[in-house]
Amino acid sequence: MNVWPRPTVEGEEIAIVLIGDFNPMIFQPAWFALEGLIRRSEAEEADIEIMHHDIASFRLDWVSVDVLAERFSAKIRSSAFRVSLLDLIVGTFSTLRHTPTRQLGINLTKRLRFSTDAEWHNFGHYLAPKSPWKDLLEQPGMRGIHVQGSRPEGAPGHVLVSAEPDRPGFVSLRVNDHFEFSKDAEVGGTAATLYFVEKIKSDFESSLQRAETLIEGLITGFLAQEHFDDGTHKQR
Image 1 (cartoon, helix red, strand yellow):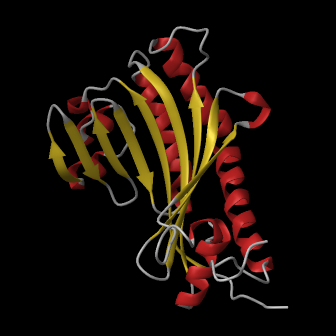
Image 2 (cartoon, rainbow, N blue to C red):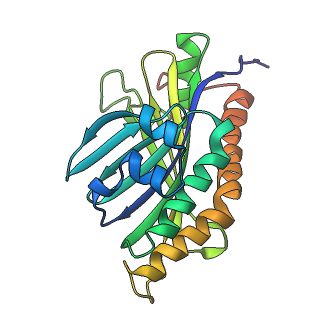
């Protein structure tokens, strides 16, 4: 029985994303400080990449905020700040409850590093067997895979798991827990935004735990494999 070295986690990212109709110019560090969502000193020291009516983007020591007309995103690169991220988003959209929103995503990404190129390739063979492609392409290789499942208990939305190779030896695994407002309810109004705020408060930790479980399940399944379909074996 082969024992494959466990890939190491080289980095992670947690993001909360809202889709809706936003005015990027609102989302300035000074506004967050005025509303008591970040400290005044943080606002003064913020790294503002761009502030325009079409896009707002700035960085604090612990969080990155990017806003387009139809997309709001806040990201952290350390789980140590997950409670701070939760508080920031809940506070922001409780204040901006009249902002029209339509969808919510709670995303976890882990970047895996494999100790050898052979193990990196085997992980690709594990996720995307090569036999179906061997007579169609020369040297087929996985560039990305996306698998979608229903949300638990039939809640509106879905769970999307993605794997994408980085430079040789690295793979990013991402779990997007995607929430939607009830199709029978008013979409885009105050009710939707407050619904998403409540979902963030109630589901944030469980969503991240489910994502951790999914990623760990993929890694465990890989480590349990004895053979990989690299396209060199004959099919019956």
